[in-house]
Amino acid sequence: MDNHFYDEVEKITKELVSIESIVKNGSESSVARYIYDYYQELDYFKENPELLIFQKTKDDQVDRHNTICMLKGKKENSRETVVLMGHIDTVGVEDFSYIKDYAFSPDELIEKLKLENLDSITQKDIQSGDYMFGRGVLDMKSGVAVQMSIMKYFSENLDKLKGNIIAIAECDEEGSSHGIISALDILNSWKIEHELEYIVAINSDFTTPMYEGDENRYVYLGTVGKLLPSFYIAGVETHVGKAFGGLDPNMIASEINKNLNLNTNYCDVGQGETTLPPVCLQLRDLKPEYNVQTPMAANSFFNYSTHSASPLDVIEKMRILAKNSVDSVLTYIDKEYKKWCELSNSQYSKLEWNVGVYTWNEYEKNLIREYGGKYIDYIEEFKKNLDFKYPEMSITDFSLKIIHEAYSKFSKGDDPAVIIYYGSPYYQNVEILGKDEREIRIIQSIKETISRASDFTDDKILLKYFYPYISDSSFMFMPMEDSGIKSFEENFPSWGIKYTHPVEKIRKISMPVINIGTFGNDGHKFTERVHKGYTFDILPKLILGFLDALL
Image (cartoon, rainbow, N blue to C red; front, side, top):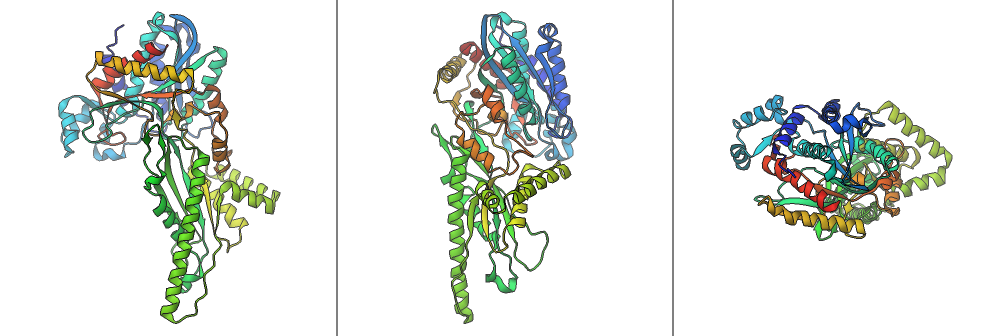
């Protein structure tokens, strides 16, 4: 087997990078079309055109496409199927500033970068000649190029392929994952039509050094998950001349932020690996303009990475945190009020605030109990009108507006509350633990592949459990246990109108996911670059070795 793919992968990578495909700007289909045309030229797909699909995404405001294809091996008659997956969209190029015209031209860009005052590591990489620079070169067009080359190889060597390989080149990974969600329909259709048995998905998303001076390469069994626990805090307005007469929601929001943001007690641990702690992505009050009145409401949301925790686990932790934060704020306010009364010779009486802490599901059930169909009809009509009038509104803003409307229209003004909800789609964490025969095979095969890698590389390749970045891998696996995803559904205000997580579609094709990816530095930065030797030569050998060991 000729495993030297370097020239082919380098050529395809450069051509893919040259085609702009910034997420949501209307250009993603251009790369999908290039990939479709590449496969269409292969004899296999000339003979089997039904196994090559240029798929328009579904329920999408943007006109864009995936390219999906399947090879059926002839080594043995087997239903076993591996899915290769990689995204073709990129982030924008604003960070390139005055050299952004060269962001998609690797050869010209590196010459421009030589003139810049860059950090010593980047300068060293430029001078080495070992790296290709450009937007999307690392994340992750070079990974897609590797997969295209592998598909070409097997299309010409079907007698060396046992089972089947599907390749998905999906759009919108950097946005809302319309690409991979749409691709689920093809995977489900082909599973039935061709009687496929899905064994594993291989993502080739980018990997990077874990710390300064890290020379290791990494392969991942599974992926990190993500939730966006959010807090709507309704206070009681007051004039600044009566400072203790109201309840400032900013104080509660700030206390929640202090107790949660970067708090390592909320890191999630799985298989001895630890996520980063929660990070506050936005904290704001909802006051529309300046005046001398305190705000009525505030909002915050947090990135929460998971290795094993479910949405139910996380929202229960947030409930406890919110209650403790409210108690702390109320104690502080009363203490300061008492001190002020002493300083001003005013009569003191204990400030009594009853602040309810609810999940969105609990809060909405309370409204339904009190108002019945009046609330249900109103809020459903509000959601539909909001989506119709502002189709481009982000899911986070959409969720917030629903809660704000429900509170504003149906709550009494002197009922302060904290409402905990999920503000954006759910990214499922994936663990491969060896809990069944399929997972045991995957673990054994990847360990065997890494062990054999010393035959063709001096790079030290380490096996870890969780790919550390959010990716489309989360849409390839769904646990059978329902309580976690049900909790997410019930506490996600945008569910059913703006977004519905494709639970059943995923569950029908659910498979473990590993990441055998590109290697380089500075993903999403203007100095983004891919290591050519590892990515163009070693990476395809690793994937081929894994397929050989697995199938």
